[in-house]
Image 1 (spheres, helix red, strand yellow):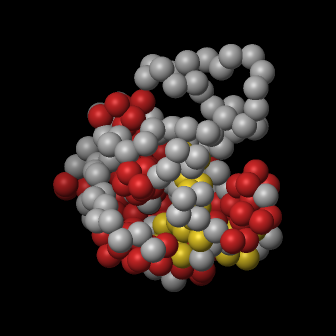
Image 2 (cartoon, helix red, strand yellow; image 1 turned 90 degrees about the horizontal axis):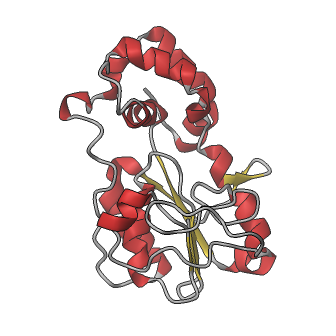
Length: 229
């Protein structure tokens, strides 16, 4: 999650929509007062070429535990953090900044997103079969939470721009144009190693039961963003 005072934009990071890649690219043009939340330690160490995490801690108090990369851990009750909902970001930055800054985020076909999340969660498991995928859907039901819940406030879309993962490069350029960023920013490939090439077609993981289960949980995303299986 990024709040850029230099460029007057807020980037809301949604789950499994290439949010880390977009954040890493945007951090290259962030200024010294911008808010940048931490990524996973491996990404911070190997992929970050712009500014690192800064100004995401909102209060003092006892020292936080330190991560493996030397950064303080986030307090989810008080700090800025990855995957924050729009409502909480508005509360933290205040109404003036929220109203006047350009707000952007990305969405993804929910059936494809669940297969991506499955390979991320199941990274240490040998079994990556459709049967294992159905077990994942039961074990990690929270992953099926619609992206709409992050991007909306009181039932209304809270963003000025919603890009689609399915045309990521094009949508990323379109977002930069609308913000007014002319510098050519390259999207790094973060978290792409967990899903093998033979699993790119998400439909092979579904039967009618699992397809309906995801449709039930992601009904708002399907309606609001026009997705279909």
